[in-house]
Image 1 (cartoon, rainbow, N blue to C red):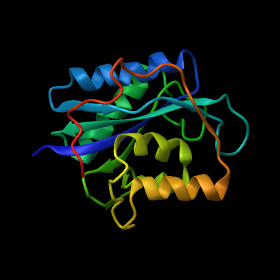
Image 2: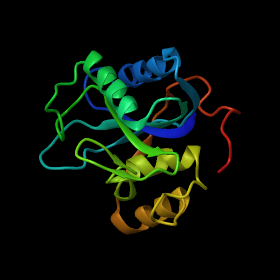
Image 3: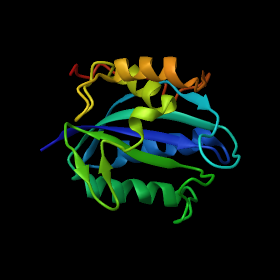
Image 4: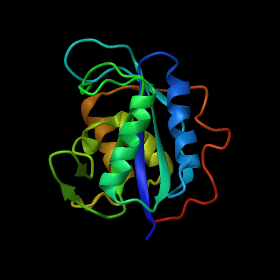
Length: 179
């Protein structure tokens, strides 16, 4: 069974856009993944303890024939290929790939939580996600991505900046289906 999956991509080391494009190329090469759309790219300041270089962030929508844990393992391989170190949580990284939503599934476990646990707190995730699927309802929230994005914009004062280049020439494809 193929399910719609939304991934968050981020990078704050090296050629950030090249690292993110690598993840998109890997999706296109994988026999059980089908790229359906890419959001515009945004730049944001690091959110967390200490200081880090700004991040580039985007979201991709794909059709996946993989189960969530298999997709997570595959994504961690892409990160490793780009030079991410195993204990890299909340540290600078060339590539960060997060499973944001996996259809309408909800999962909680030590290595994987779906929806992503901080999805509803971060404008740098919600804005590109809203570019792809504004009407998608976040499981267990009852709210659309667009509504949550608007709330975060009003509430927290996080800032994101549009980036001039996209991950692909066509940032949104006709393959995107409405929810």
